[in-house]
Amino acid sequence: MPIYEYEAADPRKACDKCRKRFEVFQALKEPPLRHCPSCGQGVRKVISWCRAAVVETSEEHTKVEKQIAEYEREGMWSHAAELADKHSVKIKDKELKIRALEDYEKAGYDAKSLESYVSSQDAGED
Image 1 (cartoon, one colour):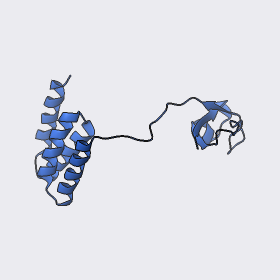
Image 2 (cartoon, rainbow, N blue to C red):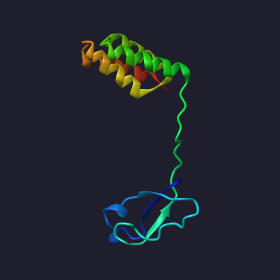
Image 3 (cartoon, one colour):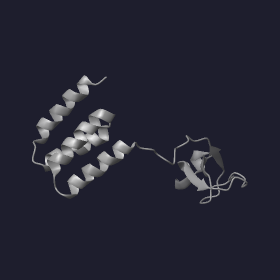
């Protein structure tokens, strides 16, 4: 069943729900909403960005993620950090880089020296 977004036709008369965009599950054959289900004020359907429901990851990335998680479960923080750090550079993933830094901290490395390392790495990327 598709998800449709709506917003108030007149935000000055809107309730908290329709003042901002809200989502509604509707069958394809159902007519669009004309009124807010909460306050009854007029609403309009909004064209929204399509979001993918399925995200595919490479087999290598999945394998690396599992290994990092295994190291973390075993408390092998420096191993997890090094693997996450190397992989984050390879795939240019800033969130994985942050995870690597957090694991380095858990392994006992100085956070300030790690921040300067990341800054120097980011300056070199284009």
